[in-house]
Length: 209
Ligand SMILES: C[S@@+](CC[C@H](N)C(=O)[O-])C[C@H]1O[C@@H](n2cnc3c(N)ncnc32)[C@H](O)[C@@H]1O
Image (cartoon, protein in one colour):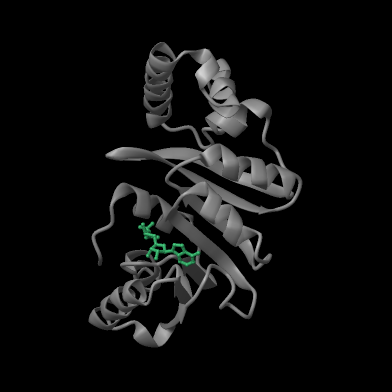
């Protein structure tokens, strides 16, 4: 088996024995190859906008002898995928890029989304575009990352959750993440002044207090 960090382990856990999973921005290919090896998906679609990245995934798939279960597509987000799939994973990008990809087409029964910054922008998009959020929790892998699992349906984010997430299911690292956000924003405000920060950071600060 491939050694996965906590973030990729959490994503793999959310893939629940499906026919087809797509990994958008697959890069190293560790997740999509692990999904096949662990039999959590029968087939995989590995997409990357960079041909160099896609090649890395192809090499890994060959090393682990699962190349016949995978399709490799070079392109932007969902655009190269023609048919509907069970699960789409988009991880390791900023929320703005993830939103851009989600807006391309409704392609999957379930979405596993792991942005590395500006998560409130993704949550706002999910609220405005009718996604029901099944899970939204934090994992720690040196930094903190939100893992958001969603499907089309009535949205269930409150204003507070747009900034602080749902902590669903509840994890011990959630409070650690919240304390760090509190300290980080406090420092920014002390340095720049409350009027110099963006409205969204102000709202997050209000929710943290
Ligand atoms: C930081 S890596 C993340 C790799 C992996 N998903 C993870 O979470 O560890 C981001 C990858 O996404 C790819 N990427 C960025 N924007 C993309 C897009 N619009 N469509 C497909 N791939 C994209 C990049 O080329 C890069 O390989």
